[in-house]
Image 1 (cartoon, helix red, strand yellow):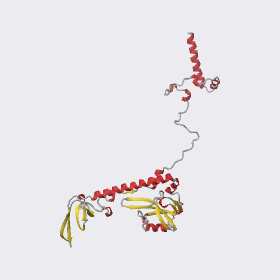
Image 2: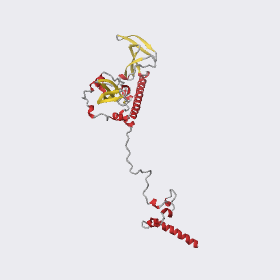
Image 3: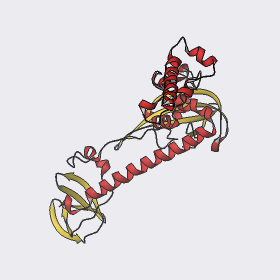
Image 4: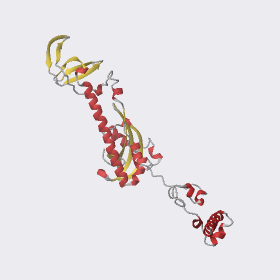
Length: 311
């Protein structure tokens, strides 16, 4: 019995001590005696809310992850890939169905140079409106397409263009050749754009200062005055066809850069102008920028503004 009362006394003392530890006025007195809350209450097991220390229960929910004191806001780093994609976009390629008007109105410049028929083709030799003879060619013989009306294709004998006849377009590879040419062109253009983006990125990584050239921040707004007489030789070069892939009529803006030092095949110091073009083709519109290098008012070369590759 004596042991029972002794144990009960100790338990009451512990419980009372725990209560005093949370009483804001008496807690300092306990801490002066070297008694702390962990000495009085056991720490609960993880995940057991009933056994958790009361001090933790009274605190605000913890924020996950470390919190750096006085952390400065992170700087926004421009995404080079997105900038390059914007400045070297994929061309706006017109769908083939739209180009050929669902095969009802195929533009003459979309015609293949030749077609093949899958059956023998007979040509009439007509003189003064009268048939005076005929000749046949075997399947697979090259034929020259001349016009398409509905499902009828007018073809000429490649060996004798004066002899022509009409054949069902489905009996030739007319459509297949146009589709193949279109797909090959689209693949070629997209591959060229991807290769260009890769070279531009390499150039920017090697010389980050070229980012200003790419984003158009390198020149003052006044440098784009279309009346600048410095653009005279630039326009004359385009009119003369010095750049095979573009024309003067396709130029939509001119920017005079002043004196610059460039690398690449034409390494040196030049006066330069950057020209932006929108090239219209049967397949769509293609935006492109080229830089013109001049010395003494004479055009020396045309290059890509960022990679400095010749064009």
